[in-house]
Length: 59
Image 1 (cartoon, helix red, strand yellow):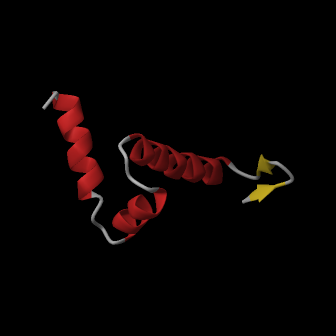
Image 2 (image 1 turned 90 degrees about the vertical axis):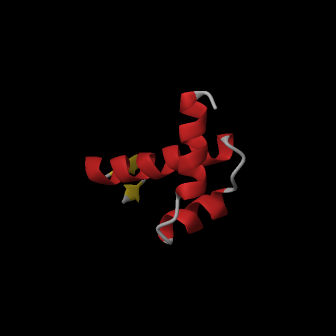
Image 3 (image 1 turned 120 degrees about the vertical axis):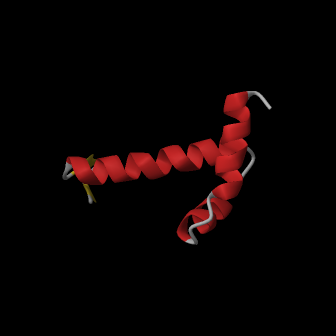
């Protein structure tokens, strides 16, 4: 939980940063934040994941 401009605990800050990183990566690969969230919540982050794999292998 964020209170007065700071995080109350490390676990909350880590969760926030993990989500923020995922959304930043999705946006960098041309996906909207809403699409990335929907895909992650439905257990289907495959489109972003497969694109990241192709980028990493140079295909």
